[in-house]
Length: 85
Image (tube, rainbow, N blue to C red):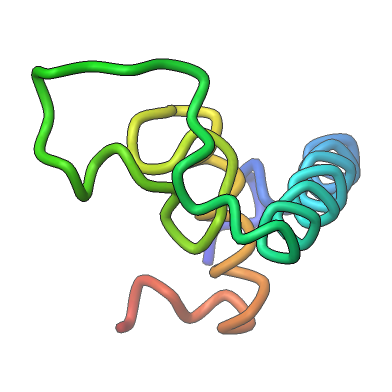
């Protein structure tokens, strides 16, 4: 791993932790409400499963912000070995 990578930047890590915490709280709340279909939009352009909240995560499958937070969460879960999987 290259020490110049952004994941070694303390400001980046703190920002990602803040975002992951916020999304985590929202996800738990959504799960408790069984809000699998709570998306900020509706569309006939996508298959039905795309219009569900993936793991109750904010914006489901269709948000770059959701993808960034999800990537950080899985990297944390797998202790930085996500790419090996």
